[in-house]
Amino acid sequence: MNEVEIRELRYFVAVAEELNFSRAAERLGIAQPPLSRAIRQLERRLDVRLFERDTRKVVPTPAGLALLDEARHMLTVMAGLTRRIRRAARPDTPLRVTAKAGMAGGILRTIAEHYAAVPSSPAVEILVSGYMEQAAMVRDGRADVALLTPPYDARGLELEALAEEPRMAALPAGHDLTGRPELHRTDFEGLPVPRGPGEDGPGPVVRDSAQLLEVVGLGQAVALVPRYLAEANPRPDIVYRPVSDAEPYTISVAWAEGTRSQPVALFVRTALELYADTGAAARRAGPGDTQEPADDLPARRARAIRRAP
Image (tube, rainbow, N blue to C red; front, side, top):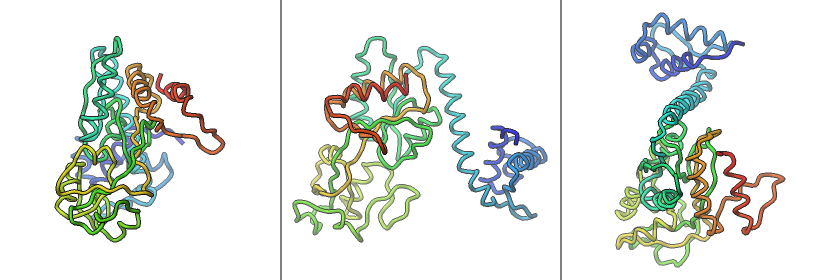
């Protein structure tokens, strides 16, 4: 089988998203006949049928739906590669780092300040990003480094965890649960909780931590939040309580898989060294791996950072 071309994937995604060859051709700025030929060529290369076609509609087949997600990811990776190469050609380009609101002005700024103190380190540009945007921004090259918190898509990324924060329950003042000194996850069953865009659930949709706290304060939901967020946002309309069996909130630093950028390596190393003394570094050991003692964190992290030398 001949290799699939990036152009063919771009054409395929346009048709799969528009569900119409004429609209896809207009979006791509080409005529419809060459678009149709390109899709037929792609189907021959893959030896599968990607669309069911008739005079009224175009519908992706199961194989087409499977390809759509992978094709989008591949196009994003290629866009990121192009951006990184162009930025690398400009020596005065600042290192772009991103995190969501709240974390950008706190943890990320602290790391950036320590990084700026390193001799010969390039300038840093902090980008404040929205809900679940950080991983995508690293993949497509808009950012060089990101701080991530779950949930996120880790495809195409290298990650190291910086810290684990206990989770706290954020409750509307006057809620029945505020009378307990400590809560459990089962206490939240059946209660509305905030959800991100596109997520299912009975609670209100929120796009950042400020919105989350607002819906809690208004009595529209209860939420699990990291302790740092609770400590930074004391409010008369919200009561925070520890949740004994909640999984910790992990903050990770991420960069593009396979990158060889020295500024990226220096920034990640600075972040890891800065948070090494917390004892909350990620234990990324898998089956058969051994856990290393806390006093060996510098050596373990030095090995980890070699993935971005």
